[in-house]
Image 1: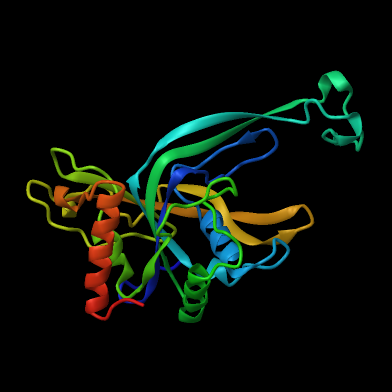
Image 2: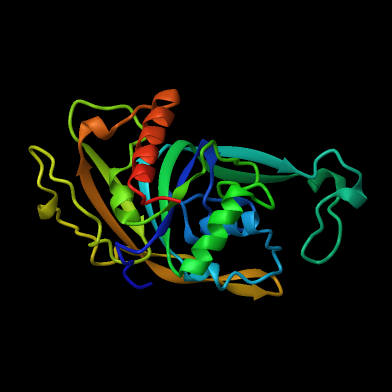
Length: 277
């Protein structure tokens, strides 16, 4: 992905809820989650709002660039599910050979991982007409959006807005976490270099001297949608860029009503300045 233009408009989303799950290699009986929202998961959320069927392409949405901010990384919750137990043989899970399992082997165990009590801000940049369509769909979703899995609905507000200078606001929006005794170190992840992020100057900290400035990829992840194949969607690997910034303690707005009030005040200020839609 190309480096986002910091002055171009972008969508800002608040991705938070009791549970979320952003699978990267979820197959068969093990369903994992990444520690932050994935491109495939966020594009799937937009596709649901737009009313895209699973058989329809998402090539246009794949042109969007994604950067996320981890307000609260949450904790990993691993859940055990059973499938097929106590059912008549004809209703149990079909084997790879197309047969039914015998009664004593009908129950399958699956392990599914979630992020509990996590909160992220996502910034999406790209062609204006795609952002406009997604903005309208987020205001009036065709199907309910979800945080990686259908069992993970988002808490409100999901849509913060379509704003100019979105990377600036990605850094300076209120943080959904309680303040600590020292300035807060916050992780950002993206699909393009993050050296365009504005680094606030916090007393006692020097963001400009961070060992990792986000210009070099730190890993790869297989979450870039490429289209559909007979067995489902196909994905390709893409680079992961990461940067950590130290943000002032007074940016931590708490949680619940306190955070919503701080977010509303920030949003009202942006609208007064004519930078929001």
